[in-house]
Each structure stands twice: as C-alpha cells, then as structure tokens.
Length: 112
Length: 112
Image 1 (cartoon, one colour):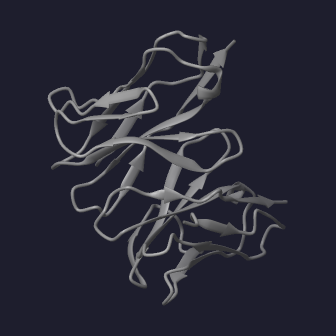
Image 2 (cartoon, rainbow over the protein chains, first blue to last red):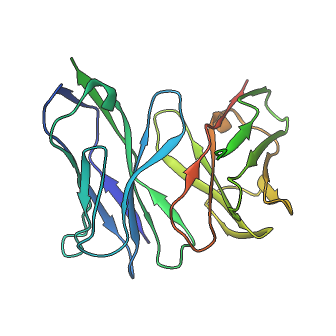
C-alpha cells in the first residue's frame, strides 16, 4: 500500500544552519505531495505542495522538489531561524484523492 | 475568512464512556477529514466525509464513527472509550477534488 517515510528526529540545529528533512514515498499512480508544519500547541498548517513530477513547492524560505525517479520530496531551507522550531510532516494524497497518508513527523529544534 | 473550528478544546472522559467531537469546515469546503494524533506519534487517518457521505475509513474499530450534516459540519463519536483513545483529534477540510487540507486546532481527548 501507499506509505510515507521521513527521517526520524529530533533534528537540532543552530540558527542560520542549513536544513534538510528527508522524505520518501511509495504510491501507485501520481500522488500529490505535501509538507505540513505543526507549531507547539497548534494544528497543522500547509507549508508547501507539489502536484506533479519535477514541481518545486516553496514557501517561507522552505523548498521541496517532487522527484519521481527517486520517489522523494525532501524539505530544505538555507538558513533556519528559532521560529522554525516545530514538527514537520511529509504527506501524500493518492491520485483519486481518497486518502492522505502522513509520515511520522520530524521534530526540529533550532537554537539561538 | 474563518478557519476550521473544533469543539471542545479539551475533553476528559472515563473508560467506557462516549465522546462526541465537533468540527466546522471552512465555508465552501464540502470534505471533512478526521485524524488521530497520539502522543509522540504521527497522524492516523480516521474518516473522510464528503457531501454528507462517508467516503473512506482508516484502520480503526467500528466504535469510531461519525457523520456529516447538511451544512457540512461533522461529528466524530467514539464509543466505549479506552485508555489508548487518549489523543489529539484533528479535523481538516477541503474543497471536493482538491488535495490541500486545512486543519483545525484539534480536540485533546483524555480518557481516565
């Protein structure tokens, strides 16, 4: 069945460091891919998305590229801030839109 | 524009009782999704409603049920509560046929 695997956390970085959170997926057809972020005590917010191969989603300095050949959607940011501390979830929605599968989440801590 | 709202914010029940959680989607959204987020774990898909009908169901026992009303709001009912049902329950909404989901802040259910 469809699945999403993302790197285990927590990830601890210093401010202005480069961030990569790996995400790979297994799916049939042409899923849409998402990164959601959950700040402490809040619900999830959509961070970025990509709906087809080679699409790049970007928002707030974060980027991720839909790589069909490697079935990956890694999240990157060139310079993290303390305010980026949160849990990040990679997700896919299947071709028919019938289900959305989330990865286990990766907690990011950014130190000043 | 108002976001997805959920009530109550917190709910405390004892084993064997029933819990009812409520969700109001963003205006114009016809799909409502329910997820369970247990402590330290990722999101587990529970239910998807669209246009008043259950469209998909995750791997949960039948004591987890719900419905969607004509105004597209939704209710999640959990019968015969067990200790392991303690979790944050998140509701999300979307336009039918669109993959992007918007999340509410969640209901924290504690079963004693």
